[in-house]
Amino acid sequence: MTLAARFAAALAAEEPAAGDAEGHLLPRRLARAVVRVLPVDGAGLCALGDPARRTPLGGSSPDAELAERLQFTVGSGPCLQAWDTGHPVFAVDADLRRRWPLYAEQLFGRTPWRGVVSLPVRRPRGVAGALDLFFTDPGGVARMDVFDALSVIELLTVALSDAALMSTWSAAEGPAWLQGPPAVHRAAVWRALGETGLALGRDTDEALALLRARAWVQGSSVDTVAADLLSGRLAPQDLLDAA
Image (cartoon, rainbow, N blue to C red; front, top):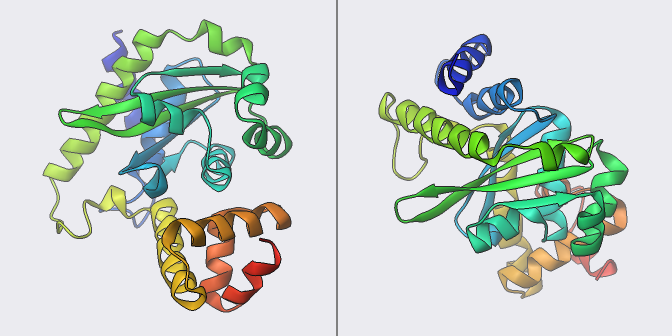
């Protein structure tokens, strides 16, 4: 059976969740299909407009989605490098500790992942996102067939494009798979940044730095800090305590 046929079968086995007729959870189904056809333990898909506007679409498991939030929180890691260079990034545990020590500390302390392969997802006009592949055994990174992984990316983009073509959506909101739970939670960060910047007289980059500092101090994520700000559990002035 070809890789394309195996991927189609794997995706078909991941039936849509009840109440998700519009396809909001399609990225999660795709990520789980990736794990079924590639020798990996986890996968996560994200869209990027620029490094500060990283939008998670869905992961194969809670640990895969947490790995994305941790990377966004520290502001560096293999996925961001794949986006920046347009080239695949391969990193075992020693590489992660050496190149991204803050990310490695969080990743190793809070997830089972000990190796990462990050692959840029391209569009005709450039990189549009990234696929992160996670390994519990760092030796799995060297055994990864990059050509199979790149073929799977093509299958992912076709599935997302087909879903967009077969549904009705506005240019402002995008297709349903851009409105899944991980993306909605990340959108809350942008709102929190605006409110924080206005309240403290800071620009977006400075406000994001404050949220990241608070997340580091309390051992959480930027997404969690943003949710606390929007709910009123945390005031913008409280962020200055961690700066």
